[in-house]
Image: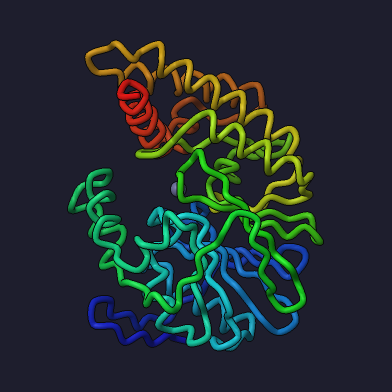
Length: 331
Ligand SMILES: [Zn+2]
C-alpha cells in the first residue's frame, strides 16, 4: 500500500514497507530509516484506542511512520501526541510534515525547544553549521513549522494521559538543554531520546547490549548528563527505549557503563584543551576507549568494523566535547 503525501516541498508517493519491532505493553519501534537501517527508531505507544509517537525522525522518515500506522491498523486521527524528546533533527526534523497528516495530534516539546518547532529558522542555521549546507539538505530537506496552537510545552514533572496510561515528562539536560524523557512508570518503561546513550544491536554479545553516550554540539554538559542518567536510573526501569537503537534492558549495568564513559570523555577533552587542534587526539583516545570497552564486552568484530559502527558517534562526540571546552573556557 502506498502513501500519498502531497506537500510541494516534499513530494512523496512511494509504496514501501516499514521495519517494525513489537515490544511489550503496546510499544512498537519503527525504523526511521535515518542514515541506514538499524540506526534510528521512532516509537509508537498504543493505549485504549489512542496512540502517540515518541520521536519521529526526519522528513524522510514520515512515509515509514504513516505506513506503520496502516500496518498496525491505527487511524491517523487516533494519534494524540508527538512526544519530541528534543529538537535535534534526527528526532524532530519530520515533525512539521508529520503533523499535517495527523489531524488530532499535538507536538509536546521542552520549553527551550518549543520556539524552534514553531519557527525552525535558528534550528536550520545551527544544524547547517554542524552538517554543512549540502549534507543538511540531503539528510533533512525542508523543515516545516508547527502552528503554535498545536504545540504543548512540557514542564518538568508534567503528567499526560494517553488512552488509560499516564506518562510523566521529566527534564533531562546533558545531551541537550532542550531534552526531556517520557516515563511510563506503570510499565517500568522510559523513552530516553538520546539521554541514555546509543546502543546498536550489531554490537550485542552474549553479555547483552553495548552502550555509548552521545555528546554532540552544542549543549553537551557532562555534569548535567551524569545527573540525568542517575535520574532515569532512579525509576528502576525494566526497559529503556533509545532512539539509537530502541529497547535495552539491564539498565543498572548500562548506566554504569555510560557514566564511566561520560567521565572519561570529559577527562580526555580537558587533557587536550590546550592543543592547537584538540580534535585528532580526542577522537583517537575516544576510539581507543571504545575498542577497549568493546573487547571487554566480548565483541568479536575487527577494530575496523567496530570503528565503522561508531564512526558517526566518534565525529559528533568529538565536536561536542570541543564545543563544551570552548563554553567552559568562557565561564
Ligand atoms: Zn540528539
